[in-house]
Image (cartoon, rainbow, N blue to C red; front, side):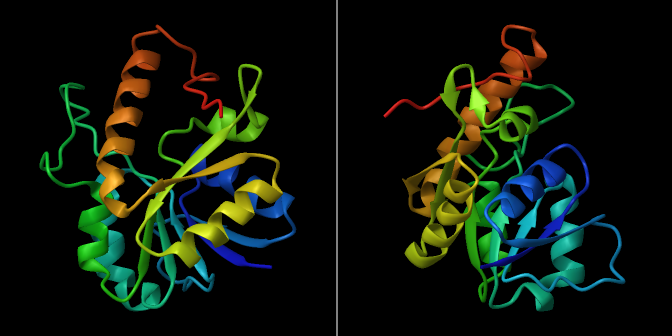
Length: 191
């Protein structure tokens, strides 16, 4: 069993916590601004807005060393809602990995809405969590946690694929914000 620390108590943090505990793993969920509690999980999920990541990394980089760090952020330009804020040849996950060289960084959960994680379905299909990263063991561990909760996990490739995952999430979020799809729906992967 794994112990997971989740930084962030918005919609996504509790939804991911439910997934973690469904498979018999333990979780600690706390407000990302509460720096009085150290992260103790083998896996740390950054369930925060992208704009909060820099501060979290500056305050907790030493605590994240040696851990699997799961980036769920989407670096959207919320002023214009017309693009991503990271360079075209990069991703939020790549920036995090560069700042945490002693951590194993994964990109996951960013293409899911909290409601589909909670329900376990997108329409009639099981919710699929796409996982990108350069560490096969870390991806397999996270995939096992996701699968134990009854969801599908797909290895989306190396951490370089995080850019495409962020673009996919951007499209899905803009469609939902434009009321073209529901926040309880989204994209499903059929394999």
